[in-house]
Length: 190
Image (tube, rainbow, N blue to C red; front, side, top):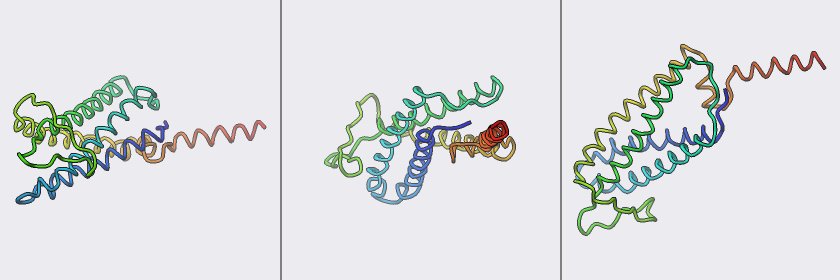
């Protein structure tokens, strides 16, 4: 089982960006007064970055096959279903955040990392409704992230199937052992 370096890199970039979003949203953006407005441009910039990473991940995933694991069909289906839910939830959080953003009158437009102006979302409903949905979806996303981390922990501790090792290093112990056995057989034959 071997994950491509690009997939692993995009996975860990997603983890870092989502952690930064959560830290900003529950930390300084939750502060008094204008704290939210002061941190909103960075929050939006990281959100756009996450969107770009997710789009890249989905394109990469469409063009490449994941490593094959020896699991039952129901486990493969459950894994696929969960990952689809995770991606859909991340995208829903991003979209509702964008749709819920309405700058106050006379406020300069938010800029991505201080450079590019953020385009305003089309007005398809009450911004407050989207902001409310955004906040609720964040909690659902955090639940899914918790399940994802728990599943990784189960693979690492209970199954010991090297799923975690392959996401960190690209190659599992099983693959290394199989390679060593192949090399030993080649040495004996040669």
